[in-house]
Length: 296
Figure 1 (tube, rainbow, N blue to C red):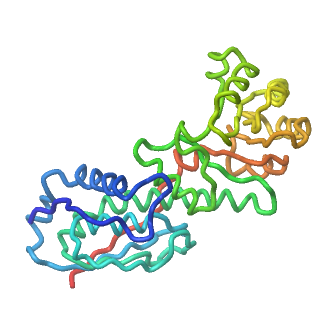
Figure 2 (cartoon, helix red, strand yellow; figure 1 turned 180 degrees about the vertical axis):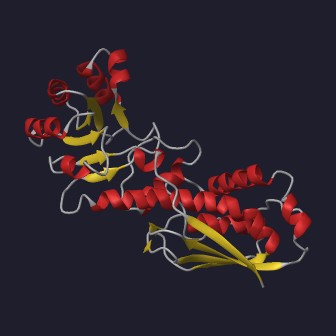
Figure 3 (cartoon, rainbow, N blue to C red; figure 1 turned 60 degrees about the horizontal axis):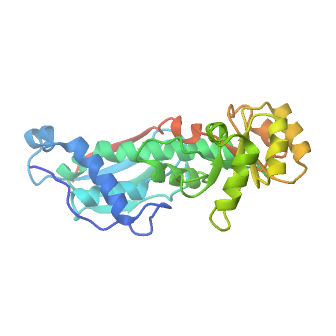
């Protein structure tokens, strides 16, 4: 039996911010086509045609669940007659051994979708799990945990969705939905005053201007120039605390660079408004989940 990717409706009640139903289908279809090639040769040679089976996604570690609607769509694209049952909710914290979802249908479809399903769910659950662990360290403080654009090409919208599932907040989705003047912009524009003035003059209505700085002197320049938000890049907690006092509430402050689970609370206690962590997406370890299939 040759399993090929077919047309399907997008998963009900699931649409990551910035990702259309068509975009989601294209993303999943490409992943399936990448894995299937001309078809699942091993299954065709070993599993009798017409065999039906049941598969379960099972957590092998404590984790935060993310990506089950994507998994459901994987199997719908392979065989619309498959029956999908979600056994837990997106964002739920589950223990090792928990059953996350069950799918029933042709054994060929289940085997064809196994790896792609796990790739999505393990990756997204890993991001959600790491995000939840870091947000827990901010309890009682005003700082919000942000992601960055350090994402796997093509997977950004799903990865940022997983950050939200884990309790984090999305920074810019793309270059067109926010103004963040960084060091390269500053060198090309001639400095902070010139860059901020130009951005403020020509920005879309209602969009704030954020500037990345590496010193308290640059912070003063950004405030004087009229920036509404300042990113404190690669500063120590002591340096950040000094900048918070220096800004005195005149701008919102974000910290980025060198933040990890061991020091994020220390940074948050300085009084900053935001802490952005690229590792939420670019370095989150995949959650340990397996897919158990049995004949029925």
